[in-house]
Amino acid sequence: MAKQGFSKASRLLGPSQYSTVFQKADFKLSASSLLILVRKSEQAPRLGMVVAKKNVKSAVQRNRLKRIIRETFRLRQEEFGTIDMVVLVRQGLDKMNNSDVLVQINLLFDELVNKLDRAR
Image (cartoon, rainbow, N blue to C red; front, side, top):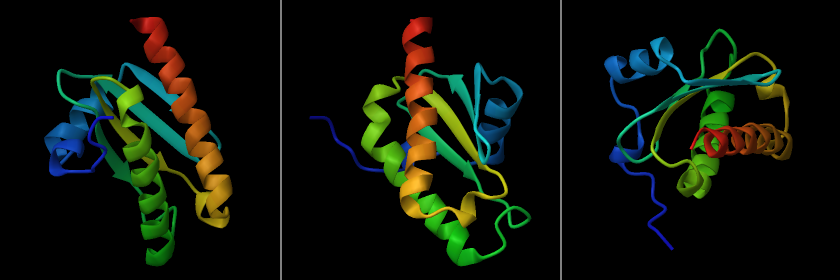
């Protein structure tokens, strides 16, 4: 079993790293309240999140959603290979309970794994 931490190397850190994924996304996966942009890279899988105050008013809810997304990514990162991923939260996700949020994220992550497998 490989290391499953969420170190600094597992995160998109600066605006330049985010803008690269936004401008040159290889895959776009969408659900009613989530959008995932993915770009192939040469490094281990990295995650960036955009949870705008405009879409999720409460800081408590923004932090809850980020924790759930981060933990789901951490547990499934071995399936992704070498990619950079940005998860954008849309309106409505903060109204869902944790199990519904997990279902949404896992459905999109399953779809991503299928697309990555087909692309290999």
